[in-house]
Figure 1: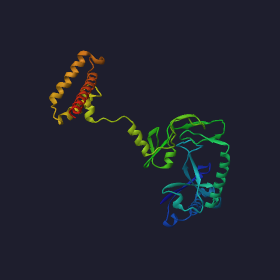
Figure 2 (figure 1 turned 135 degrees about the horizontal axis):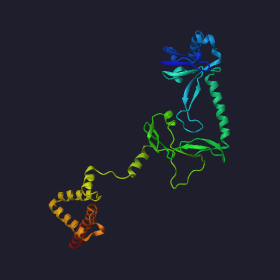
Figure 3 (figure 1 turned 90 degrees about the vertical axis):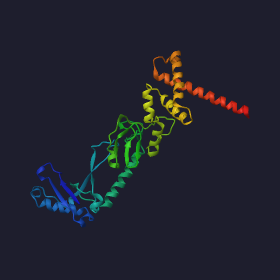
Figure 4 (figure 1 turned 90 degrees about the horizontal axis):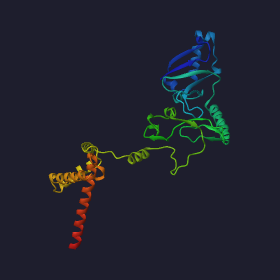
Length: 313
């Protein structure tokens, strides 16, 4: 495991220093304070320390983390997060991560937790007099009744499907971990609001695999290659595939293709001559009308058979 310790908190760049450390196995499960002590010792022993000596008790370590600032997702937003002096290295630092040496005394895990709990308590009190934007992807808070800040949001809810995370309105932009998902850019701008739009259906805050499958099944039914080719061959007729399938089925029932073609061509010829429903010169419309006529004739024939069966009974 390697880490890059960086000191850059000085206007004089000649006092800046980067120290690359390959951690011994025992250091990985040791406290982060050991890294700080190692850096300070190396820093003060060099030319940087001669010009700007550092005191380990007045310094602490930080790592950079990407976050959502002020409730608005911004891919460039990042903050320096303090590392506890007694925190285990492998639990707080990733391999080859940049670790920053910053001014200010280190704090232990318990001290950072106590400070965070106090901050959460203050935020909870503040929220009592605040509203939160209801737009997808915007978590901004503002005083109840306004003023309402500018809003960057999504028009649809988020989708969490297997390992992918994305917004339903921006399906081409996916993330596979929570941190990256938080930084996906928004697609809408406007003004924050705490009033939800009225809708007949309850709003879903997020979508999953079942919702995606429902949307797909509710969409237009995909045609087979054979159906598509039959439609194209008939000038774009939507009914042509039905005629092709019927021809095939009737053959299995003993009706020769030649007989079917003779009947179907005769119906089309009659439709053209009579210009039924303005089909003149439009082959696709002729086929559509012919399928309707043939369907009606087959239905009539089936009814006649049914009537004959009732008479026999």
